[in-house]
Length: 146
Image (cartoon, rainbow, N blue to C red):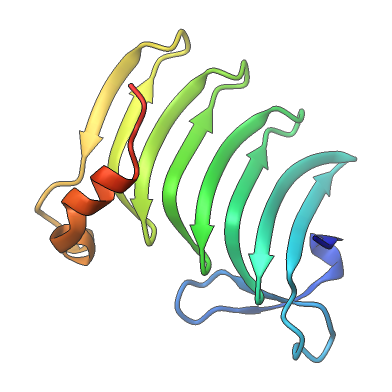
């Protein structure tokens, strides 16, 4: 799989998500396929997979000092699947089921690994209607670890 620096690619905004669509060429006719990496002061701070120009696959975000901060499953420029956040010490901070950028369930942990809070989407608010008919399926497919 080809690996490219973020700054070496050409982008335009995805009208549906506001995220970038990535291209290999200046005329934006050849969608990029591969892994995009971004560095800050020589430290990897972001990497993600791109298919046909869209962020699709695994996304990893790092603290400026290089420790893993987040890992997300993505599909067509949206977070879709399991999303995890980590403390700098590597301990899990939270894990969520996210469907098309809508958080379904989230478990939050303290810095020692104990469950601090469990959150579930409520029947109120516009995001609920995007996922309500398939909540049981999503919870079954994407299991959160306790």
